[in-house]
Image (cartoon, rainbow, N blue to C red; front, side, top):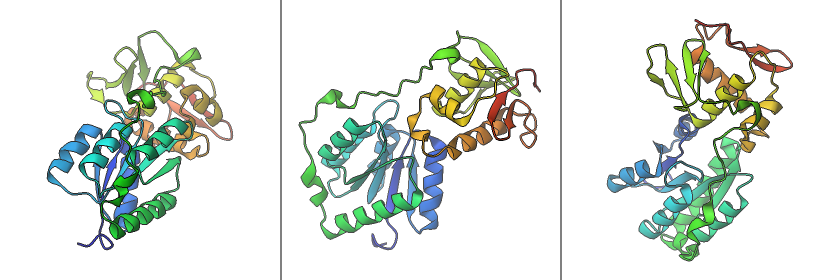
Length: 265
């Protein structure tokens, strides 16, 4: 298939729900999309498969997006690269462009904007194969992408390692994981875990979206507080005895959310 008809995209993001949202949207627009949860997954995929363009999250555990972009630019010079950055990552954005990324899109983003940027980069890379490598710079200091998004929480949320009941599950702050009643791990993203930690540190207290964003320290939520609602909806599916009638993390209309520790399964 020609690039203009059905471009192959590779999304590399450690947050499964975001990768899934992008995948669904681009697939509906006629793209062939693969999602990789880490740089290592992306390298494995590219060993046997072609991609016309990669959408890379900068901040990932293990190898970060900048390191992967540097490798892609050297190894696959004709591939388009679009970086996803948070507003605070100005240094990373500049370094990314020095490495040879074709564009960047700050989080939170409108999928339509990401689509427009991707289409624009694909037009450029299709018109001039290999030319995307022209911006590559091998002289970027290795430590330039200091990972600033520490997962540790401040204030009331910094509870000692303990097991905190959340409906059908238990939050183990020592293991940094959510467990079901049989002790099996329930998959959660870093942001979901951090949200639960904030609730655990503030039981029976109404928290507004602004307070939640402040306590969780994920600044990329600022302009798009619906993503808090989306994550709480997903958490409820995991922890609530009846997700349709939430009793553990309740909505307080017009005010925010409240964690009720006594509402257990």
